[in-house]
Image 1 (tube, helix red, strand yellow):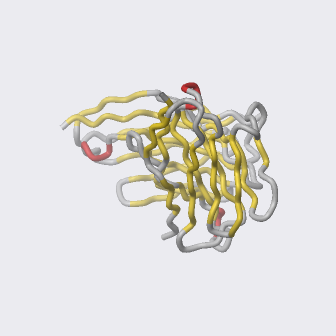
Image 2 (tube, chains in turn orange, cyan):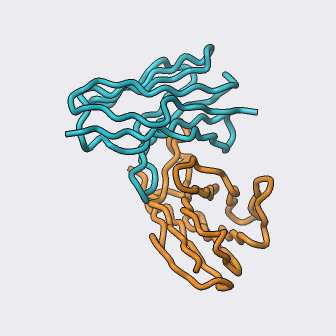
Image 3 (tube, each protein chain N blue to C red):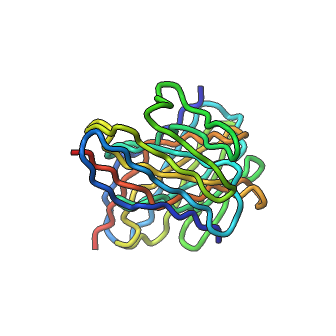
Length: 117
Length: 111
């Protein structure tokens, strides 16, 4: 089945540094990928929609200068948390839709646990 | 605005019990509904996807039903096992690309 690979799985960084998270679709092309954020015991909140070759679409309340998204190829999207602060600590998950398959099924990466000290 | 609610928020059952997880959504104009499993600190695994024109889907011990007109879906787990312990998320897609998730049901199956 379709696989979405997300790296790193866990990162600990100092406040003020930037962190890049990669999301790759391994066996399909994804013109659109999605980035979610999840706080403990809460559901996934969509942060932004990543569009290959164009600017990402951010949800209301998400700072685009804080969470930089690049979707340079049909198989790779990156999320960079710039100047991270402790309140950015969260679980970040990406997903992609295999548009060549029926029913627009979503496939998810394994997630990245970000801890900002 | 579409809202997805899952009841119960948490559930603890003995091994072998059959159980039902509930999901409700406020806007019946959906394209599909998907049930996911999430283990602690991990990503999501898709369990079942039901198209808006379908009534149910089955995979092994899992059966998901959809009543679009009433805005409800249920996930039935037969003969539960400790390995079924996880958080189960319901998500609806109104078409296009957005997907709205419920808060999940945390399931614990006791051996």
